[in-house]
Image (cartoon, rainbow, N blue to C red; front, side, top):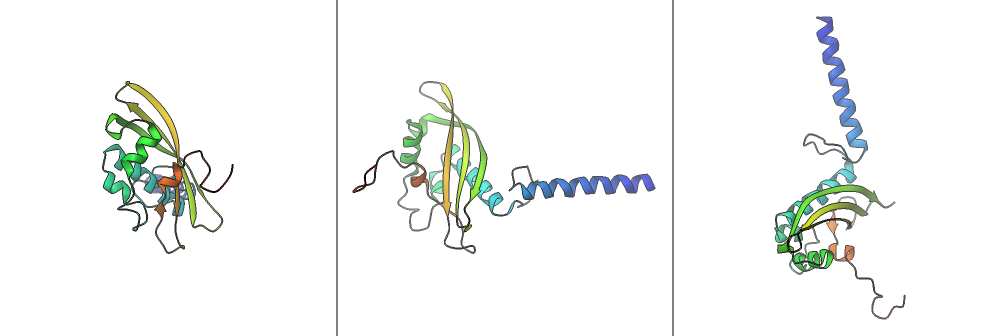
Length: 163
């Protein structure tokens, strides 16, 4: 009986330890569906969900990660075409992974570095690309909103500003 009790205690302790490490890593380890990791875990899950929507060409759902006033005007297919230089219909997202989640001191701005493995269906080439997604919110009680257009800003000065 003692052996069974010790076995149960050791397994329970290892499980709690693993979930603790998962939480403090910002959800970087699989959490068995539990919403662990705090803000970083939430952003990690949001970024993964966004890329899943893109993978399955659900552009309306992908636009829903933006602020409500921008959701109708954001052109996800155009932004994806700018990023990969191929029409979204000719792009197969094979894998996506969140590499890093970084929050600023205020806790209201964040960036999520993601690594994508995509196949260009026209050329038949498989490429890897890293994409930084930017998120912001008004305050700690507000939801996170993505700014994909900021993530894909062209390399040129804004109107009226010099490099």
